[in-house]
Length: 300
Length: 202
Image (cartoon, rainbow over all chains, first blue to last red; front, side, top):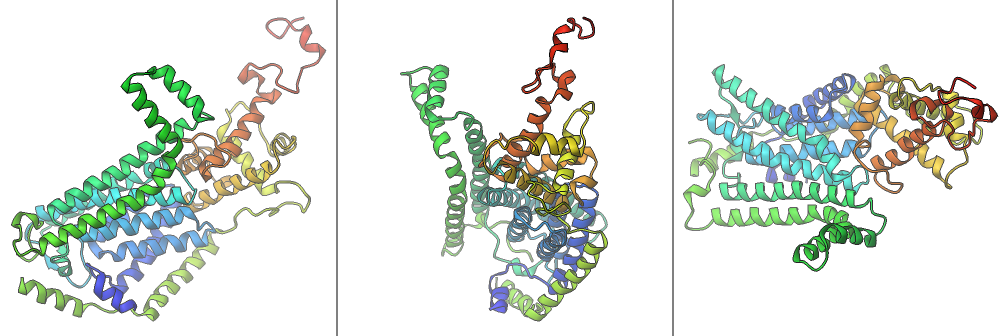
């Protein structure tokens, strides 16, 4: 079962030795970072950027290192889970988007570093949106934090992952070393339209859920919906279209805002799955659109 | 395209297979190393109900009161005198606002201490006041409204921060800070009425 899962579904190889090494490195990184009071988002960002060198093993190893650290600190909890989800979703999607992730033993030189750079940046942005939203959603559903505070904690990690990864690629190019990519990713990456659509869905999920949660949180200061309705009527008046729509929206957010945040993840998941399926169908169609394939194959 | 497919197949064939034994050995090795590290730095000794304190029916143990005092020192203005006996008397010595309130307060203290151990490398009492405030901030407790039945961060805001602020504002020791000469329960006695407007004359 394990081998089937490993060989059939992974787009980028996971190397056991790398996972074991990354577990130790991830544990030490988390231990040093916590002792130095470095924000956990920075640690996550560094682990994501480390995937450039050791592939998705960095995320798996970093996650296990994190769990071991928290276990021996007596502090395994929702915080551990949310960071683990952030890491795994981030690197999993990044490995899918970006050919600039090294795949352990299966390596192939990139002849176009700018393309590796571009795909890494695009992958970081889209994967970061999804990872942050998914992690914040887990924190919300588990009753640990509000969606917007959890997202605000982890968003700097996306920036760290992007900056460190870009710096690593640029440095590697200047040193004359080719950035390595996994050959196993050939033909598995999403096309441009799919990437754009996923970006829109991810951004809408993250920004929409943050806005809804923030508004629901602030409107929660009103003890009852009737008091909120009186306040809105005093603010917007009555009878006009703006007043009617505004009142309806605010009352809906007041009543169902938190439920909408909880339901946002399944909705975004289904939408993303449909988009990816449509993208695959289009790629496999008898009249393929050349521009649709993102950058062509890796070994051109 | 054909080359790509063959390359893909070759690559997968070259991949080492990760057996369960290898996986367990890797995780076990890391766990043993982590165990040595964890015990070496004294981690893992979290707050437990009654831990480090007496076995009485007190709502909080000495460890809880110590942690709460450390948080109060980080939150209160420097001119506000605070020590463990003051926290114990003012916070846990009052009439319980609602049934189960102290239990929720203790749970909030434990949540903060657990977060400090996980992400700040040690218990709250081992951190500087600035880092104690950082713990509350990174939990999200400073950015939410106090809600008794909300998320962990909202409950920390409601029970822990709310109670600490309440006891400070209602204590006579904070009169100089708040300008409230006679907080509830402290009418001040007859000598108050003998003072002049500046508080120093008769």
